[in-house]
Structures are given as C-alpha cells and as structure tokens.
Amino acid sequence: GAVVSQHPSRVICKSGTSVKIECRSLDFQATTMFWYRQFPKKSLMLMATSNEGSKATYEQGVEKDKFLINHASLTLSTLTVTSAHPEDSSFYICSFGGLAGGEQYFGPGTRLTVT
Amino acid sequence: AQRVTQPEKLLSVFKGAPVELKCNYSYSGSPELFWYVQYSRQRLQLLLRHISRESIKGFTADLNKGETSFHLKKPFAQEEDSAMYYCALSGDNAGNMLTFGGGTRLMVKP
Image (cartoon, rainbow over all chains, first blue to last red):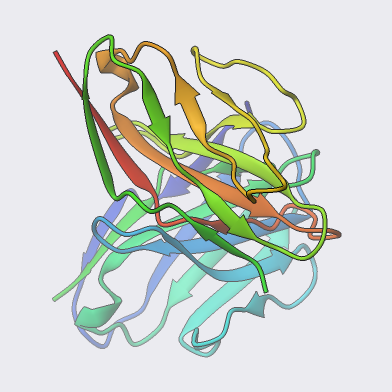
C-alpha cells in the first residue's frame, strides 16, 4: 500500500497559538485527500475533503476559518489549527484517496494537546 | 443520507473461537462496502472490500443487500486479530469519500 506520513506525530501547544500539521504521500500522487479527527475511543470524524489546487470542502460543524487546509500539491497537504483551544485537543489523521473508489491511504496521525 | 452502524463497541472472544463483527448500512443507491482495521499504535489500513470477494488474514465479508449488512467473519480468531475494526461505505460517484461506522474493538483472549 501507499505510504503516507504526518508531521509532527505529537505536538503540545499553548492556548491561542496556531499549529500546522503536514501530511505527505511518499510514493504516489493523489488529487483528493481527507482530514479526520478522532476522539478517544470514538470513530473517525471527517473534517474536510480537499482536491489539489481547490478550496477544501468542510463538513457541517467544522469551522473553515479555524481549521485551515492547504492542498498545495499532489503529495502535500497541511492542516493549520488556528487560535487553538483545549477543546481542539485530539488525534488528527489525514488520508489520500487511492486509485480505486473508496480506497484511502491513511497517515499515522498527529496527537495535538492544547494546554 | 448514508449511514453505517456497528452495534458492538467491544467484542471479546477467546483464541480459536469464531468471530463476527456486525455492520449495517443505509444507502439508497449501490454502495461499496469496506472493512478498515487499526492495530494498536498503527495507522488505519484497508482490510478488505466487498467487490474483491477476497479472504484477507482469514477474514471474509459478504454484502447482503436484502439485510443491508456487511458483517465481517473469521472462523478461528487469533490473538493478533485484536484491533479496532471500522466498517465503511462509499456511495455512488463518491470517489474516495467514505462514511465510517463507529468501530468495534475486537479483543482476542489467549
């Protein structure tokens, strides 16, 4: 399967600061990618879908001005959590769409802790 | 709207016992169904998809359109099967977008 990396793997930041999470596909290119949020012992919650070169499509209830997504190239996407609050603490996971419908290649996730 | 339901949050079995992880879906069109698995401290990865009709790591899943189910089965569970399992649905023209169920944690005891 394809390899997807996320950086950093974990980050601790202070309330009010911004944090950027990078998601890279290492061995393939994909036009569509996804950002998820996972709460402890809960399922994945899709935050947004982005296509390379276009604005991201956010799911209902996800603030686009707070969670900035930049899908700069076919191998790189970034999620910036702006003005982070403790309730933003979570596990953030990215994935790239595969060649086959419904197929996604997931990153290892980034654990964000806002103090 | 599409929805995926996994009624069991936790399923605990002994090694060698049969396993069935339940998944039900609601979708008006022709869905594609998947099972994704997340082992401890590892990333989520595709286990199997209904259109391939494969057996992966001894697991199989049959799409039952009449019952709108896609249960995951294995006749003899192994300890290494312990993981979080997610059923997912991709709708018509959805591309790669998936709707995930809530997940079932499978614990296989020695």
